[in-house]
Image (cartoon, rainbow, N blue to C red; front, side, top):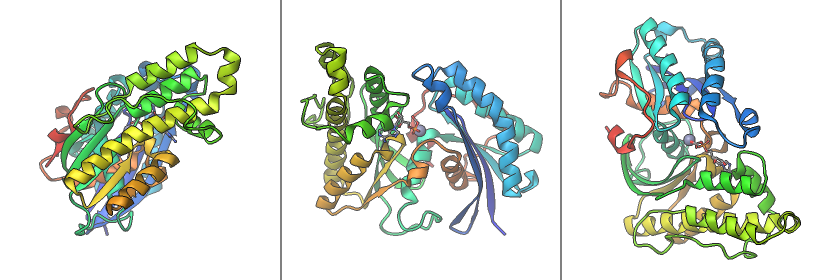
Length: 353
Ligand code: KG4
Ligand code: ZN
């Protein structure tokens, strides 16, 4: 018998993630989890249109929650709380999940646990330590330095404990995933550009183009990618459509390398200065093999272990929100249904307990 069971809902962007997850002592069990991706729909417009995303979430939320509950074999009365992503993200999309969670919290008379989307990504890295299924607190966990790279965020976070976050660096303009997606569009690759660029880049020469690495030498832990994006755009303007096609792999590889160099340099700078027990890599862009490899090599040189989120939990999902829900439930984070709203911009530090 578990001590705590959470229903989790994630709708901040273009994935509807639902999970029922429970904990006995430090052991976590995912009882059921489902993910409805909208990628095929957003491919037609080359990116996410918030209202379209919201419409899709609305259509799948109810059946997906019912399916997940049924698969989990958990009755509503056995649920201790409903964890929901309240931000940051696209307001129309977030609002669909928050509304569903509010309705269920009201109907079942359960607490709502507001979750910051990035907390979800951070926890997927903390779980890779020894065993993905435990919150057991070992000496080699904290402080952790987390590089969170997704479509909306590029953050360096120092986690001093579970649910204790300090942001030490962030992007000054575009997020890493966002530039992958934008450059993907410039190269006429399907949405999302990240996985497509890394596939094409495998055949290319990463030194073919000398793209800039803005802020790489700045004396802080911040990132900047918009100058890189503009540099790619200008390079493409100099080329004929045939030449772009011919050199697509070289452009993709050189661009990818520039992003990776910036991400790795700042993470290693922060790790050198702060000597965390481990480095965590998580978020959608953490699925990038070259980034995983490159950060692994550099962290080994520092003798600091790197723990990368499992591939199935790199992109947005409900499980990561449920895991944070298990940790946060009952720790001053419980709200009643009318106290929780979707918010586009939120600071993860405000969610520290
Ligand atoms: O975390 P996530 O699923 O959603 C957000 O919270 O934004 O991240 C999605 C992002 C997209 O920008 C996508 O292009 C990027 O992750 N991505 C990648 C790779 N796989 C996904 N970027 C680079 N290389 C990849 N292999
Ligand atoms: Zn995300």
